[in-house]
Image (tube, rainbow, N blue to C red):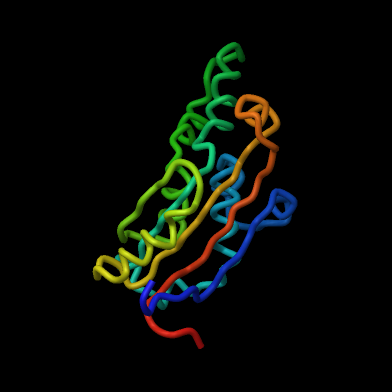
Length: 170
């Protein structure tokens, strides 16, 4: 990561969601997208001063969209059937799209299924190759109790975000 550094980092947890005032779209997002958007908000970046077409986003989702997929599938017997609103979040990359829409970011983006080990390396590559001037790295860990039982891991729900740029830290 030659000359690449983290300029901001944050974490968002479910306990912070009720107090988040992030507009009318926020309430309809799935849990992973809500946490990812909140983590990016907490970075405190001034996106108006950044070239939105030169900002990359690298997202890692530990369990993909499995929690949302299960919620969606449970709705099959509900009056009216499966939820078209929830369907939009049955893709692991949904959180990436919500961040892009909210901040009008049009630079390169990548979604990784699993751990966040590759995020910093991929973000560094995007910056060093000249594809991006900065890169948001976001990892979402949404393991509901139902998903935890399936995967045999502990439940948790949080997102972490950082912003990487070229140069030297202040």
